[in-house]
Image 1 (cartoon, rainbow, N blue to C red):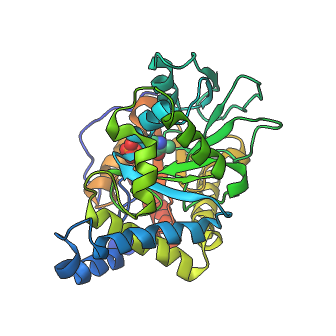
Image 2 (tube, rainbow, N blue to C red):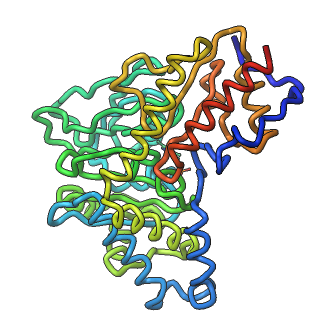
Amino acid sequence: MIPHVTDTPDIQIPAELLPSDGRFGAGPSKVRSEQIAALAADAPHYMGTSHRQKTVKSMVGRVRDGLSELFGLPDGYEVLLSNGGTTAFWDAATFGLIESKSQHLHFGEFSSKFATAAEAAPWLSSPEVIKSEPGTHPTSITRDDIDLYALTHNETSTGVSMKITRPEGSRGLVAVDATSAAGGLRVDPNQFDCYYFAPQKSFASDGGLWLALCSPAAIERIERIAATDRFVPAFFDLKTVLDNSRQNQTYNTPALATIHMLANQVEWFNANGGLDWSAGRSDRSAEILYSWAEQSGFARPFVENEDQRSHVIGTIDFVDAIDAAQIAAVLRANGILDTEPYRKLGRNQLRIAMFPAIDPEDVAALCGAITHVVGALA
Ligand SMILES: *Cc1c(COP(=O)(O)O)cnc(C)c1O
């Protein structure tokens, strides 16, 4: 059944069934009120001040150091950052990280986009794209002529996650789109060369920035391509990003509030036990959501393979007799936001974020609220 929008039925969810916070969107996602309060407290001497001075540079330093700690980065790994979000990073990587040929795992809307950028670049060979059906993920194939393997840790459009491992025996760089995964899913930094993301998902901040955790091999690649005569627009120049990042700066002006909220979230994770703790919150939420769906009698997890079921983005299919679009509309009218599915997937589905900022108890409350709505719709 193709979801369709109808008039929203007038269903009031009882107050005791409502989650304490109604934000379940896949990004921008819930920002904790403590982050907003910390920003407001610092605002008079932080907001509206120069990003070339110590106040802001030290906040960028806290983000870079905090991420190194959170991911346990080995010696020589560096944290790069610049403006434009993940989408800008794909273009930067097309200019300055792929030497001549990349291989892309395509299993949803987001994982296809880097492949499209590489395909369009006349200075690169045509990339290899390995595709699988939505709701599953493909596997890399090691080849001698591939110098960059493009993986996606969590495909946000379908709720599929994949374990990050280097393709066996490969010599190419491993570049991972971790936009929705970073901070919410575990990863071993020895398995990647470039783990890139934006702060509006598991890091509970705002959009417009990208960050990349780079191995010595990735940094060597950036420097080597920069030394060739390949034309690179200044905004996408990874060597410029590297030089600025090392000084806790960005090439052009960043959004200061984004950096502040990001630093706060990274330090919240580290203070509570690091990635095991933050990913553990998402694990608990996922356990609650998927077991509720399996026991509901009217819904079930879209992703069949349990190992591929994302712990940060849950996709739940509903039986044909129930219109998921109506559930999402009723939830929205009751202050529970952004549970609509990814539009291009076209399924009778809800998509629910379970990033670490989202309280597992709120996921449990959401499940109860959906059960209530389904009962009231019947
Ligand atoms: C959200 C998302 C993006 C896009 O990020 P922007 O910062 O909006 O460019 C890319 N990849 C994945 C996996 C995402 O979840």
